[in-house]
Amino acid sequence: MSDHVEGAESAHEHDVIRRQVTSYYSSKLAACGPTSRGVDWNGMASHELRHRQFLRLLDGDREASVLDLGCGYGDFCRFLRAEGYHGAFTGYDVVPGMIAEALRLHGDQGCRWRVGGEPSEPADFAIASGIFNVRGSVAVAAWTQYVHQTIDILAASSNRGFAFNILSLSSDPERRATHLYYADAAEMLSHCLKRFGRSVALLQDYGLFEFTVIVRHPVG
Image (tube, rainbow, N blue to C red):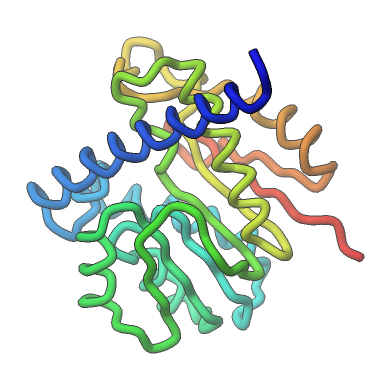
């Protein structure tokens, strides 16, 4: 098969996945509103705990610009402002209703909200929270490729580094859901080390059935 045909098939699969993701989270928002459950988390406590892991990436730089891919209704922006971070913030989401809620809740003062899944402008740091979890009916191999492609988007959208979280295969097998995607932490760490260099950290010590990966770009 030619590279052109393979590329076309990959792009088609990517579009199908995005349509499925858009439909899923649109239904969650409609059912639960702009809340933690509306972005498919169990509640606010775990939602905020996930936010807190990304502070390791920002490393105390309260002026840094941040891009949130899959921002939902913009709660990470609220969290950052409450923590004293006031750099420019840009949120992207494929669900138009999420962006409408983000704008309603947080306005445009120091924040920009965009509908889409591929940022057109980079920030100092980029993060993605929860966007790799809901596989639905997509084949595991296709979803894994989608995850890797989206991680590349995060890398290209950040000047200094990026981070993401993902459900872990280290979770209890009986608690796993068939429609969710679980990643092997060691395999993901190896992938990021090979692709992005040695400045990679993996956090899996914060009490949730997931892990967070932090990648810093080489300086100079």
